[in-house]
Length: 65
Image (cartoon, rainbow, N blue to C red; front, side, top):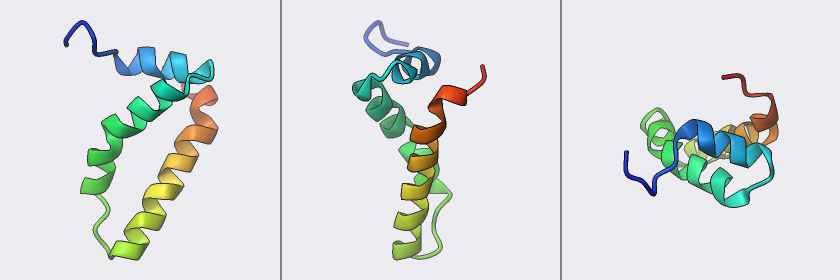
């Protein structure tokens, strides 16, 4: 891991404290994984991704390590 790249745990901790940049980095980091598993149809895929991101954002404070 490069010195400039933060760990997922660091990003979660920062996001819990309201750091929007950390949240954006988390979402960007995991978007490829989410995209890999959403392939039903374009509109449904977009809706699913939005729901997943909303769940992540709204539940970040309850994430358990």
